[in-house]
Amino acid sequence: GGFSVFAGIETLLDTITNFRFSEDDIEYLKEQKIFEQGFLDYLKDFKFTGDLYSMAEGTVIFPQEPLVRIHAKLIEAQILEGLVLNFINFQSLIATKTARVTLAAKKGGIMEFGLRRAQGYDGAMSATRASYIGGANGTSNTLAGKEYGIPVMGTMAHAWIMSFPTELEAFEAYAKIYPDKCVFLIDTYDTLNSGIKNAIIAGSKLVEKGYNFGVRLDSGDIEYLSAEVRKRLDAAGFPQ
Image 1 (tube, helix red, strand yellow):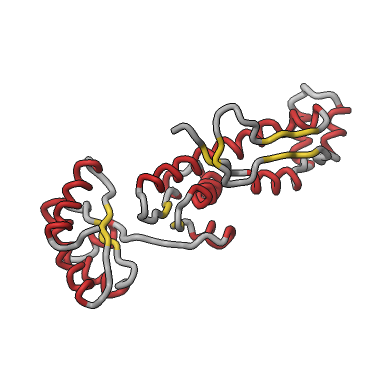
Image 2 (cartoon, one colour):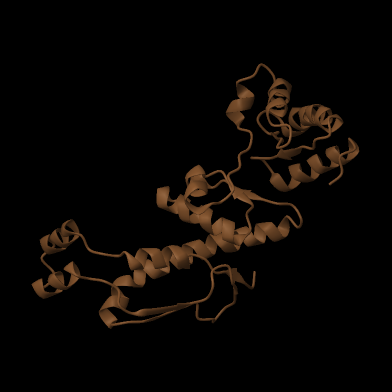
């Protein structure tokens, strides 16, 4: 560790700029019977009027550094406090994790496909955006690709493999459709006893045609299996 990657400020600024309390919001707060009418009237016309100073998004940051500073009326700053912390903390966390994965991959590019495990729709969008800031080459989140201009990518699915009579047939069919973007998912049945063997067979045919291929692991003891898979690829004549 020792560092983080700053992210979230652009989406935060968009939200603060357009932050308003709707009539429904005001009515709900009124029903709680804990606020004075003067406060509710104030919220009807609420708009942030202060100044915000921030580090640039994507900056490498270190402990004890100020990241965002807000100069505003106390009531405005207090209303927005939770919003600011939520946007900055979550997206910086994701960007930092992605940066560390990118560093671990050395020269290898990575993509993010965290949509399925994200904290809801909004979490998926902000996490995709932050991952791109942190170093991911692209995303499986098509909507984020549309909204933010992030390159959209995809990989083979377990369901694809299971829809064919054999794993090898699934690999060969996929290679035929996507010869220049072929990554075989090798742990649907048995990573070492079938997956990598069939990937090498199908991949060898691609290499003969001038293409390349990769393999992907989704489960199991990733550290052990990845090392074993690397050995099998090296032995078959496919170095890094």
